[in-house]
Image (tube, rainbow over all chains, first blue to last red; front, side, top):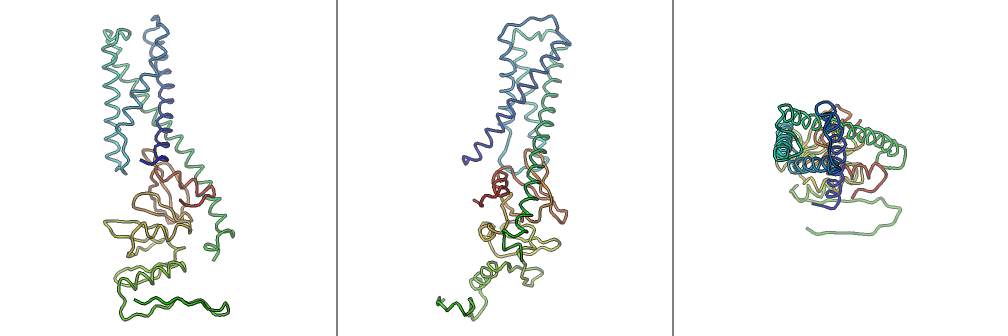
Length: 157
Length: 149
């Protein structure tokens, strides 16, 4: 892997991690407020979004590929990635003392929450990519005008 | 093959003359190279040889070890490797956008996001080609006025 590619990958991983921390925090606030409002946590609870986001980022990075995948392969990888995250979060919830998995709504709510964060992450990433594409398109038009208007003898023929 | 290089006065036009007995692969390669320097590529379509102006080229794609050139409506096969063509055209607004394709930046209308962080380039003839994430930094660099790497 080249340095440029490693840097690009690191940027994407960090961007995904930050996004996940934000979305997981929002999800915990919403789920907690709606379903378990009276529960009190210690300061350690602030580590949870950081930890869960790490799992989400790792699962996404493990299932990524440098190959140019077909749409079908891509969807399969995304599903595997989602299942890995769901599995990891549910396992952590079941082994944790702080998450009340004995209540019937907790595991379905967690699974639905993970799915929602997964979808939101992809939607936000698509939006970021769209902005980047718009910038590239604008630069491309400027580049083409520059080439035609004289700086290139090749295209001025 | 004997190589003759001769310095001539500036009043005389520069000429590359190829003297041959038969058009062999080697001779054809030399002819193709000289033509490409003049802005043309020698390529085949339906068993006939055509001179394809580089400015008319939309993209070139390598498929099963064969290299194809695409203009607005036609496709041609050229006896060259993709990396050789890339090297030949790198100062002529062509850029590698995936492991099997180079595209003419002058023929792209716009860019839009595709799946998995990739981009899709919409060409002036309506075709769409994928730009791999790996090649996006190089694209941005060139669009900002940088030299192709």
